[in-house]
Length: 444
Ligand SMILES: [Zn+2]
Image 1 (cartoon, rainbow, N blue to C red):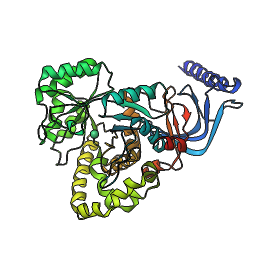
Image 2: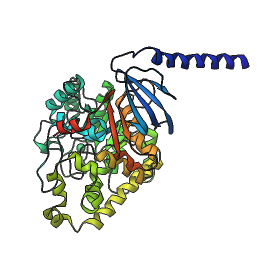
Image 3: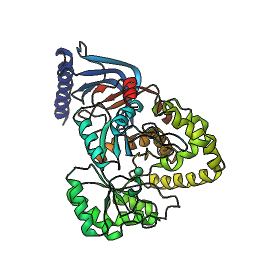
Image 4: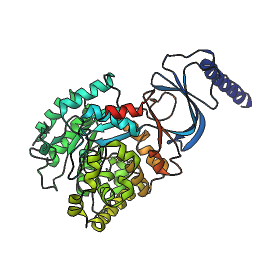
């Protein structure tokens, strides 16, 4: 036994020497090689911080060293003991831009927003409904490098009832009233390769909704085609239905108290939750917590008109007396999320950016903060916006060798204070250092 261990450690020692010498003796295996030195690697899955160096090649993590290899000839970035986390992924956006009450919108379109959000460390997002052909084109152009922006994933369309939610925006939607129509629509949409299927199921709502049989048909057809479903819904009854028909995920956290036992059922079924705390609760803070709207990162991510809209007299005249009422509602949603977190449900960060109370790119940082207020540790909240979203989308967004090299470099530790995710020093997207000022300019 001892011999085996000795042999094994000898082999391991040789392996690390081999890795080490590979980088130290060759100038650079690829011309785009990038070495990040003196970095504190915040491994959100392992829940450890390692000091070391990270070698990036061809958009991926090629190696990690405890000490940087000597004589490395490629580009080196000395990070001076700053903190490195995986790139943030927003699991629920409508990436056309921002709206605010009584304000001119800053709509810029998906291509520009994909560039803008890189500034905030958002290296990928899931657009859950917009202009179908526009999203197909933007995704294609981003993937082929026509422009340098955050990774675009999308449901492309929204499956809903005739006159149901999503149809009110005047964009092409895919509507259906029967299981047969549902199956045909899923098959037709699948040809455009949606990354997920977005379904609106809310019989409780005033707007028309698909019925349960149609809902079940969409989910079954999507499952057969290997495409995950994200269900927009409003009530816990609708969550129960989503669970029973086998949906992959639901988005928006209901505002009434969660029924006893449901959190455990969701956890057991491994149904994923994208609660979008931001869209439900951050309007309160935008209006009544002056530090939020004053945040440097928020201010960088939108126009003065949008910011003024949240502070305008008309807005305060309309909602100025709502704080107590809204805070009570917000607390209920936080309690509901806390129940899900406690039960061990997989929760992912999504903001529903594009709506009031959100800012594209910025709001992911708010979502992460709100997760910690619902009982997640800082580690868990970071994972919910990085590695776990990656695994939902089938991409490796961890900090292991072979993972995609999309990172946010922070000036302070997010483990000490989760709001340090906003103290961004640099962003790396698919192995390339982002020119943050330029990408911000391109984004408007
Ligand atoms: Zn949405």
